[in-house]
Amino acid sequence: MNEIIGSHDLLLVTLDTLRHDVAAELAAAGDTPTLAAHLPGGRWEERHTPGSFTFAAHTAMLAGFLPTPAGPGPHPRLFAGRFPGSETTAPGTWTYDAADLPTALAAIGYHTACVGGVGFFNKRTPLGSVLPGMFAESHWEPEFGVTDPASLEHQIDRAAEIVARQPPGRRLFLLLNVSALHQPNWFHLEGAGREHGDTRESHAAALRYVDRHIGRLFALMRRPTFAIVCSDHGTAYGEDGHTGHRLGHEVVWTVPYGEFTLQ
Image (cartoon, rainbow, N blue to C red; front, side, top):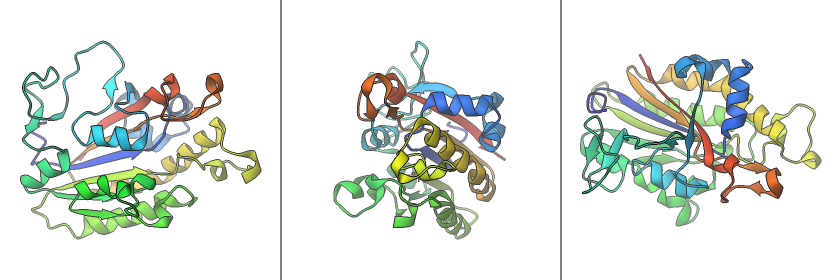
């Protein structure tokens, strides 16, 4: 990362609430060809989230604690705030003296921008302003949120505007929080109605929707861009009696992760 920071734009796409098992199944079945084409080996890496809901997970990730590989560690981190005794800061880790990654990147000349999706990015409340407040520029509109069936398309439109006005010599760090997978997602499943509610099947249908459109985001990013695409946490659809997230079930803690360079 010491070679990438400063020479590449950075893109962090958080597929909010995406379960690892659903993502892996769709990739194996060829149902998410755009994402598979960019993932190393066409497969998601299985990781463990640092938080069981959006606010906790994003606060951790923006402090350098990305989802952790599922196998035994220690696992060196890509970037980390400097502090004594860190066992996951390695020679390849980009270290910084700041409380969060956007602040650290801004200090070395990056423009930091956020396109929010779920409510923790809506800036309508003090709590909904914490995460977007880390960025020099942040955006949220109702059509970016969980209730709009075309949310990702609207978010990518805004991302395109941000990228287009960056001067050639200035690097960009862009976070796009994809809301489409989060409940409600029943409207992504053909033939489903509100009365059917959200299901594992509609969750999968939402991922297929994301795959149909996310290629436009990758195409509009400047080259070279180092991209991280991952979930912040999963969600339960009745497993062991659980529904939703902010709970300690395997389907919540296990998330898909991928990193690659657009060049």
